[in-house]
Amino acid sequence: MELSQHLKTRMAQRKLAHAYLVVGENRRQLADQLAAAWVCTGEAPPCGRCAGCRKAAQGIHPDIVRADPEGEGLKAEAVRALRSDAYILPNEAPRKVYLLEHAELLNQTGQNILLKLIEEGPSYACFLFLSPNPELLLPTIRSRCETLRASGEETHQASQEGEQLANLILTGAPPEACLPFLISLEKRDREEIGWMLEETVARLTAALPQRPDLLPVLDRLAPIQRACDFNISAGHLCGWLAAAL
Image (cartoon, rainbow, N blue to C red; front, side, top):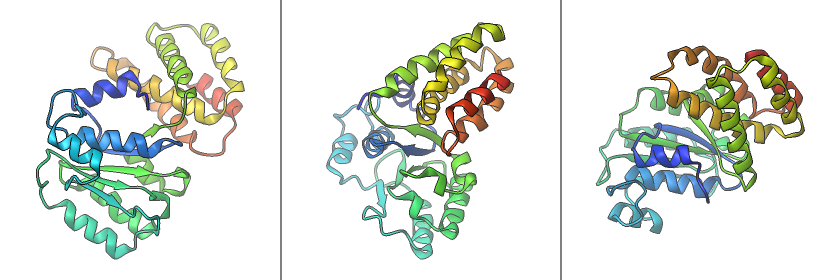
């Protein structure tokens, strides 16, 4: 699948976050690429040529742990075993990756165990939570992860719109210049708005070192981006965006 340029750059520079919530129809494919990037030992991860990438592609890398691949739901004791395993150093890669393919099946106890691990675990441990229903995960888990949406070709348009919104913010466009753009989004669905905001937030975050004044804007956008995972109309999201900007 085609990745956004921003995500490709973060992979190549080894600047990925340590925990992602991956949603959308192509979530497993995207998760596999992220896992390969974490265990890659070549240049510009995932290089596809090093031993780490080759083992990841074959599904035999010892530092990529696929938890609950059958979708039976991990019990608390299995989650505790995963937590213990996370404190064992990687076998051969710079990172150790835990891929939970059916994260929505975790009960509250299991999610709370993983929450502590995400917050306080070893620096080499990385986590991929995959789910078709992210709203079933605890808000505390979702807030500790970066959300990536892996769907179809419609993400390209959303990425372009995200870049457009970021440019409006970066150039200090007045509200009357932003309003027509926001009104046009009311015909989109909330998932597409979520993809758009992902690109906007990524571009604003990249500009933070030179533009610390963007931090309050990012704080206002964060809850709107999270709300895209719930049953909220595009109209309400656009109104919220207008008020935030």
